[in-house]
Image (cartoon, rainbow, N blue to C red; front, side, top):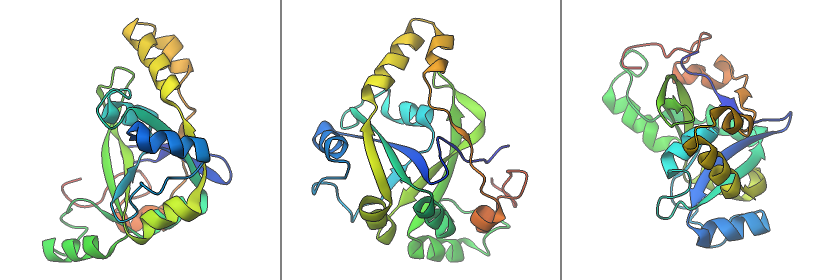
Length: 205
């Protein structure tokens, strides 16, 4: 499916990934919550796809993204964010016009972006991965209410990256998190134009 949420998830939680400078990431992993230096008034993007996170942070080598975190959050919070989200881009046929989309974007505490999923060599795949941006009320809820646990998965990222560099893709794949389709039908994604087949209705998807 072109637009499908895939994630490591249980009956009560969903795991998402973020990367931070060690000054933020290490205290977060140590304490299981984000430190005071983590700014709740800024938009924060969470990613259910481990490999898309690796693409974004360069396997934890980019400046201020050296600590890769796996953040386990409640399904209730994750689904609240989806219900209260807006697409990050205008889609003709889904939105009445550019002005109404911009108005919705300003009012929504969360926004959804679909970017090409990545393979182990971080090349784009022909289907999309969810990125979920949280701002305002959503960012505060994420940090203070939804977060169940925070783990430092930088060593895992480095181990997989070393296997990829060495050409052992099978061994690298065996270490990847078990990301399975997350059932999110029209009740959660319909307002984003995603139909039952995982496609976005309207032009410009």
